[in-house]
Length: 419
Ligand code: PLP
Image 1 (spheres, rainbow, N blue to C red):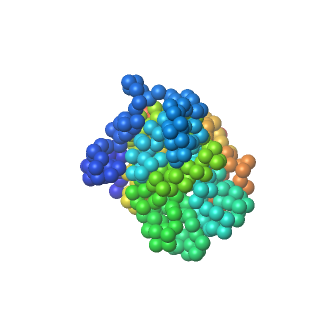
Image 2: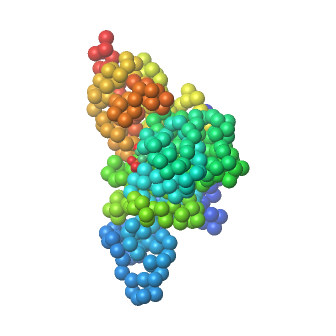
Image 3: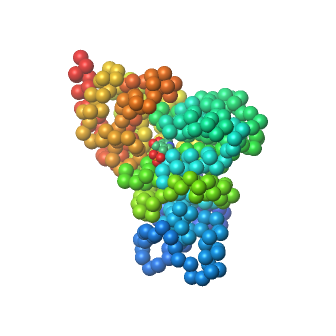
């Protein structure tokens, strides 16, 4: 069992209409949609979208001003409320995720916090995962309880545990799959069905997969959130977030958004738009590189364990094949020799840059235990499934052979100094 080299394209051969936003849309593929889904919003002769670097927009008369000031999500009234560049990016993201609309924020955490705070009130209960991106976990552990919202954290691979956690006042189920940094998966269709039975709203953080590899809304999830800082932007040069959902939910979330003010600058929105133009080719190449490297790493004697959804050895590989079209950029692995050897290995790499974040054109690597040592104690790291010799490797667009050569040299060095 495995993905084809051009795994993002599976939908095309299986069912050409699969990527349509609605039955009346032309059957374009994602490769084409990232270039043309915002065409209807172009407002001048420029081939490339202009940057609307303006905090505020002119009304031609009183009637137009009244419309701008009162219409929810007006794209050209005041940039905290919306901006024409946001609107173009949103059109592409909604098309890719198969949602009615999308909303942009200043960061992935802006998207997550704004969405969660818009959908819960004091007295409500939330179900989330034991393994989430660290700041998302803090939202459930530390922030929501201060406002009278209780969260139950469950092991995400255990759908029965999730079912058992639901209470009469559960309003929200939040999932993240693959989860940062352990690449544990959540069965999205099962979560969506369970939530629907109980009238609960679902949110999925789709950052690690991207809409090219996984479309949670098509599996029944209500709201899809992204750190667009990662794969969507793709160049490690911007910070942004996105919320993809129905018009009704977007309006609710937008009302919280204009209060919290996690506003994406027009410049970063424009960089995101430019990054999206190449999303399909980047993801296709990154998927292929990552799968090849994960398989190669599994064969290296200095590597203890490799986690990647595309590997047959991943405990949830069958689920990965069912709900994903490719594995995405992140491989997690454990280096033999413990914390010290792992530090030496990361320090010896020449191509993979020692830096946080993921999903961009350059490969990045972090020694996870060292990165989170300041914010998590040993017990918290153990609970999060992070051993001291764990690294998170975000595979970029370098040639796979060059990356292997770099990894092999660093693994040998880490090992040589250890003996
Ligand atoms: N969600 C996931 C899975 C992440 O990995 C991150 C950041 O690493 C975030 C959300 C937060 O994104 P941002 O840094 O854009 O706020």
